[in-house]
Image (cartoon, rainbow, N blue to C red):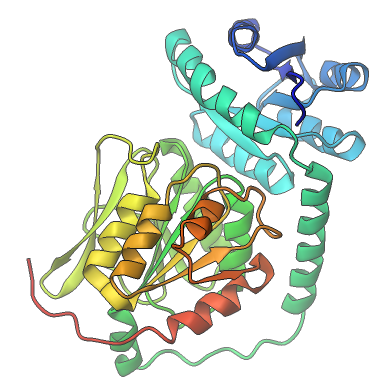
Length: 371
């Protein structure tokens, strides 16, 4: 963006929410209120007239809901859209649909006016600044081409790999793939886990999301993957061909117990600005698995994950970073790459093949000892 203010169109059926967002925008340097709309139909009229740089869009609205409005916006004048969702399962599922369709990011409204104002003053304004200038048309074209290529490949006959033998399973169990991702993550992870095939080592994932979102997101990934995917819980044992997604609002730790590696989810202060934090999860994985750990840092805002990638490399592990061309937001992965914490970059189109090939190069060793 140039030095001019970022012009924002606020779309929400709640007068209170429109007022709160509008007031916060007016108090934020470099951002100005272009206008407001109470539903999708009014938003489309305002979009044509005001030509905003960013739109905040309510998920649930009468007359024309958030998804229908988003589709119309992207079809006529693609600008960055930040979805504003309730902290409910319905809100989470609809927001995940919106991200798949081309919304660039979202915020979840907490309960109470004070909590909403604090969220909008911090996270929403930060995301508006980051998303302004995003080439949404290019992002949609890349996703369309990727989907066409993926669909064509999936129509071809696939040779099903035989189940891993006991020996294979033991060899995989003492390795780990640790994935960190944020903005742009849901569609990227859908692509990745739709393409990955067993056998693979255990996988742990930190996707920056609020609490109500990670469980339905894990269900969604599980429905399209040949791997077993679930929201992580304390006591879960890391096993081959299983994927554990850190629950929103809690850190994901790993520890050894009776010769196995188990998950521990816990509260705590945000680390690198986030809870769950990629840095926390990757540091645990590095400590336990050492040179048998593969780190993967993907699209996202901020710098969470760079220190974790550094911890993996310092213990002899290997780190892959998603490249700029295939990232919705080249942020977390850029920081890790620039700071020297990435061994090799990859395109999302080749992510599954690259991760699978690199995981096979990890050294094998029997986990010993218990805590």
